[in-house]
Length: 118
Image (cartoon, rainbow, N blue to C red):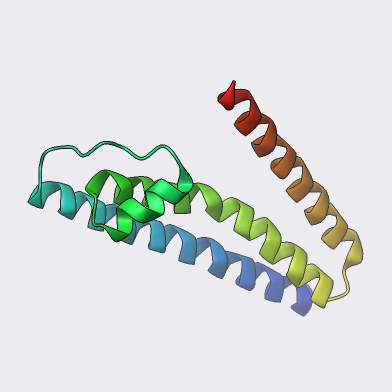
């Protein structure tokens, strides 16, 4: 039997996932249109700030990279949304599990970033 509170969390987290996918798809399509309008591939930015700057400057490669960045960050935002939803519903056990998963993801990203710099 599904409780009402569980379905609220499911709907909220589902909305976060759907929004992230639709937003990334829209950005990717916009990047593809920019590329078709100006087919010489611009140099791909190497930093997150460079991706944002390039997307603002209508650089097709940077815009496509931004769409991919949004798509990759969607699961992280989902975990944050689930943690907030569980906390608001006073399901502290699941909120702590969400915090643990978020901690593992953060540590993994930091290790990857540090490893990639050397």
